[in-house]
Length: 114
View 1 (spheres, rainbow, N blue to C red):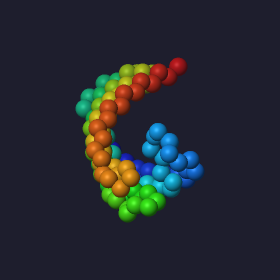
View 2 (view 1 turned 90 degrees about the horizontal axis):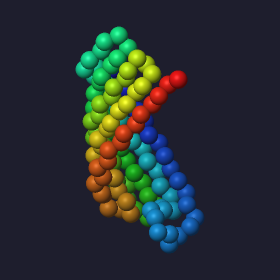
View 3 (view 1 turned 180 degrees about the horizontal axis):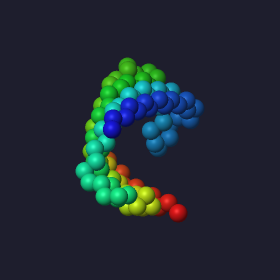
View 4 (view 1 turned 60 degrees about the horizontal axis):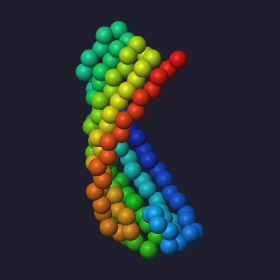
């Protein structure tokens, strides 16, 4: 299965000289594709892997528009449609105050349906 995702976000902040990243104005446009491939299925138990890739643009006030790139790989397991768990490793290059920085992140999630 191939899914297309679109991330649109923007912000307007009025406080200055704060100890966290707080651009006056910014806007993100990030289209991406996610390929979901089933590795194993037996009745309602499923194990799958996901590949994710995206490329977009980030604009911040007082700085030039810069590209954003994103790559990810993850796996999910679902047991009987009740318990669902996954992990995703993501690599991203994103500009902050005009300088592109590399981020590597790992996300874990667990869902229990009752």
